[in-house]
Length: 221
Image (tube, rainbow, N blue to C red; front, side):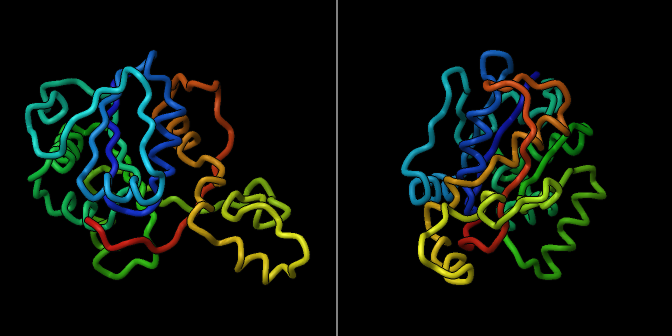
């Protein structure tokens, strides 16, 4: 299968890193595009992005890429994390960057486009942009925690870090929220890709977990 994976300037670069780590680049054709603000956020949150061998990387200012044309067959595109600025520009059909043009192509060709916003709360403009994209055929999947597997604690959801000895639950909840908490989250995108895109080969075999985190992020486009 042929996929386009894009990252934009929303907080949550760990989701992009884990997605790249889970999809087997030897079994699928993977194309990666990062916006300038995505690179900034990756530097701040991860230090650097580990891109598996075989993943084809492209800049965000060139239309000389195969997935910018509807004549090139691709199976799906995922934008993760997807900033609300990017989401709004896709809804408006601006198509003035590689990521925006590719998303427009996937919508017009009725191909699978998955947007993973992480920012909350939404304002009315955000909600209307999401509604526009849903009507156009996109799949909007916010990265949020789930409780379907009955976690015994907040830590079990992967949102918080390990237990801090000697503190009350309220104190622990406050103290666990830190810059590196995202590195301990259980992978949500592995389950998303398996469930939505069909039979995908993962580097580590079949997926089952589907837990993430939601919240506000920096106002980067």
